[in-house]
Image 1 (spheres, rainbow, N blue to C red):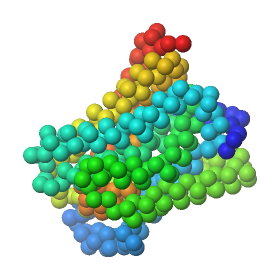
Image 2: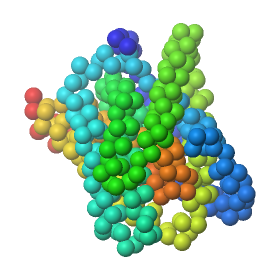
Image 3: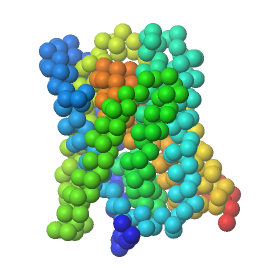
Image 4: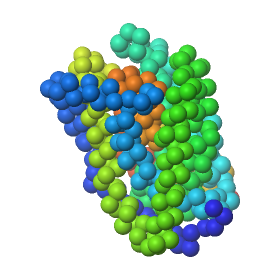
Amino acid sequence: MATILDTAPARPGISFFERYLTLWVTLCIVAGIALGHLVPGLFGAIASAEVARVNLVVAALIWLMIVPMLLKIDFGALGSVRQHWKGVGVTLFINWAVKPFSMALLGTLFLGWLFAPLLPAGEAPSYIAGLILLAAAPCTAMVFVWSNLCDGEPNYTLSQVALNDLIMVFAFAPLVGLLLGVASVTVPWDTLLLSVGLYIVVPVIVAQLVRRAVLASGGQAALARLLARLGPVSLTALLATLVLLFGFQGEAIVTQPLVIALIAVPILVQVYFNAGLAYWLSRRFGVAWCVAAPAALIGASNFFELAVAAAISLFGLKSGAALATVVGVLVEVPVMLSVVAIVKRTRGWYEKGAMA
């Protein structure tokens, strides 16, 4: 954990499937709703496959989503945090002191008040809970793609993501518990702690053990080959999970299509607010643009796979919370690509005003 990589981390580009993730999610909505009507017995059998409130089918799919992403994280990069301490400080402030609280506030403002008459009766607290889960965990794997697209400093990005993952192991449960309590949502603490163990702690340990074994036997080339093979598996598992969610949510979506758009509003506002705040603070503190750009992206993006998993575990496949987290998946790629475009186009403005 104390050593830095001898070579800079790989700089991934956005894949065909990642670029059109919004399209695939839309197709999952259609497929899920159709299958929910055609084979309701299948969805009922899947829903009943639970142990200690953990749906076994969904748990397997979520592991297939999360573990390949965590394989990319090198906790040895934590040693380089001090090289970019200003940028790291800005991002930690946004990720842990601003974003979860701003999302809770925005969710309450829009869904609990402004849009309340347009939402199904009694569902607003569940939607707000989903938004809180979405904002409480910073993004992991996709951040590497966003950073690459804006020519971000790769060692900063890697060290920041590793640090966020480490903090998430300890901070996710108490932060979610606090904000759900403030939003007057009952917190099933036993299920929340089980979710943290099942979807954060154990996957992190497994991924790091596999990563070390692969590096020991075949080096970085072997790890790159493994990640290339697992990438499609991770995305397929995500899409399969979404089909299941929309299979259960189909009736609600068909009868209330406006709900999706309304849930998206606070998500969009919080993304641009947090990205802008991180970018402005970086400029004020004299952070180099190649660090400030990924800092804005890390500050704004969410670990939506974990949010989906936690929402299902805490509130169920048919819950409004699960639906709200899926809306986060729906808007993730186009919104983050727009943030990439903004930071690239404002580079001249940023570098003129950044303080030494």
